[in-house]
Image (cartoon, rainbow, N blue to C red):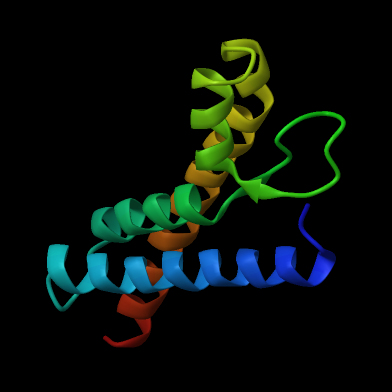
Length: 112
């Protein structure tokens, strides 16, 4: 069983790795100047990687929603147990996409 400290350290390491992955994706997939659609894609990827969810109704700790959806669908109770974390994942995807597109649009307007 994880202690509170080891749980927090594990989540911080996961989020640091996800942010490092986003930086690498940004540098390898996209041109130096981002457009709104590329900001939307990058934000959506960030939303999918960084959205947390509860693995189950009786669980009090959070886990990355992408991992929760995959494990609940494959090894848990099937799609019924993956539905609520899947909704969290979709909302993270949409919110990340909007934030990414907004951020790029804001940066492009101030640089003109």
